[in-house]
Length: 68
Image 1 (tube, rainbow, N blue to C red):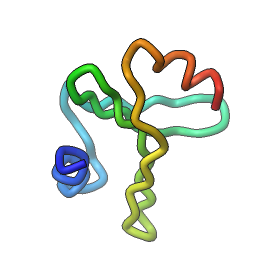
Image 2 (cartoon, rainbow, N blue to C red; image 1 turned 60 degrees about the vertical axis):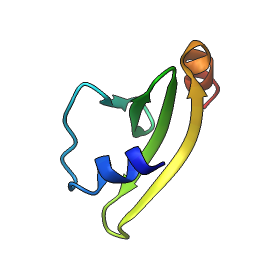
Image 3 (cartoon, rainbow, N blue to C red; image 1 turned 45 degrees about the horizontal axis):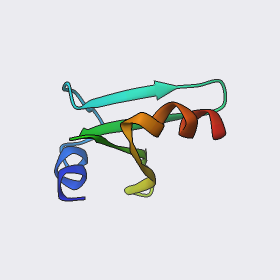
Image 4 (cartoon, helix red, strand yellow; image 1 turned 180 degrees about the vertical axis):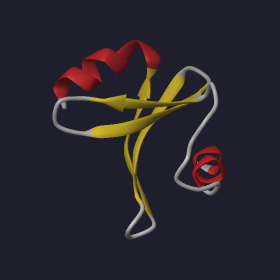
């Protein structure tokens, strides 16, 4: 969680190899790579909120995304 906080604290623009924005038909969220786990989150700029959607092992990531 500390890594997520330090990554998002930099502002709305998120760059780097550890963070990727995933865009779907209905919504958009970000993925932060932390070892073998992925933290799926959304940033709500208007309310200054980071909403953690899930912490998923990388082998289960595709299944998690399809279930959304």
